[in-house]
Length: 58
Image 1 (cartoon, rainbow, N blue to C red):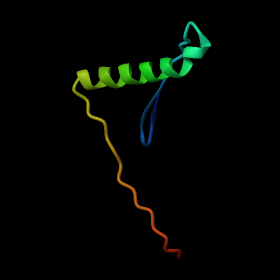
Image 2 (cartoon, rainbow, N blue to C red):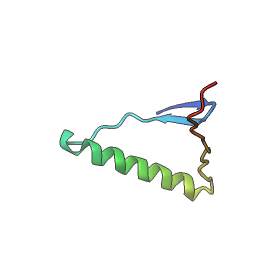
Image 3 (cartoon, rainbow, N blue to C red):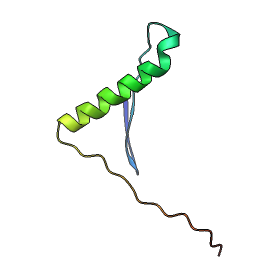
């Protein structure tokens, strides 16, 4: 596992592989859900950033 602090948050990189490549996307989704659940279980909150899209040009 690799860990890096970025300006927008903490970036985790995990090397893991499914048993069958056909299950790759379900495997990635499962790891993502488990990771977010583990973060919530320790009391951390996820941060969202507001953004604005304007059609005005300078």
